[in-house]
Length: 287
Image 1 (cartoon, helix red, strand yellow):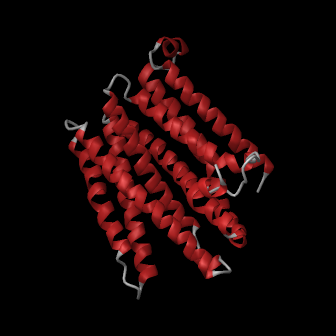
Image 2 (cartoon, helix red, strand yellow; image 1 turned 45 degrees about the horizontal axis):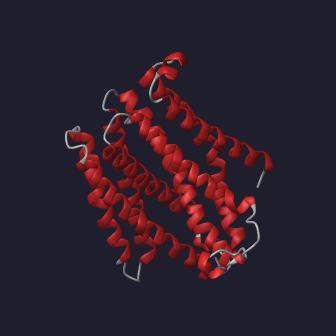
Image 3 (cartoon, one colour; image 1 turned 45 degrees about the vertical axis):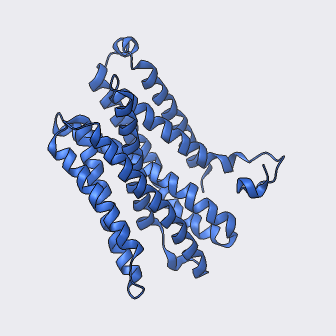
């Protein structure tokens, strides 16, 4: 495959450096971990139900997490060249469009496979499904005059709508006690922040840095905040994951080993160990 076909800056016949692969590797591991978690939580459910559950978790998580990092990290005024800031914004708009569309499709499929679910959770997801496309349309049609302020307000509202949908999803996936819902919400929230950051890095930061090397330093400094969040996200995912697994099979290792979900729990644990190792290596190596 040629450079033009692949869109890569590495010519044919040369190995791609591990540093260039790691962000994609992390994103792949996060997707795998989320799939394994849904498989365990919905073990025994029809394949369509598990697929819809995973899709809505991944789509809503990427939308909420990506919007958080867009609002928290990106500072257009920090770029030496205003055109670089516009390029970052343009790339994010494309990612945002895909995320909203994926969430809309996945959310409808999820509700269709969970028709008998509690009204509170269903209503929360429904609010997100109605609000997200409308807010996205508002972003696309912002008037030139006060465009930046209006878009910031609309993106904040879109982020809130995605959070409401995630809260509804967490409720539908537990629906037992307030404590279980809170644990599930923290789990999916931590996942959303991480996968949103991974999406931002892979589809906004890296392509912009390749196309505009002068913008790389600014993008890197803005991304340092995300890097500082990751160890906390790992700890939250591990703690809430252990709690939820114990709720399914108990705290006994023998009970877990005898459970049919053991292979999937083991796969998710392995993925989290790999992610933890990558985070630890990054922290030790420093910026």
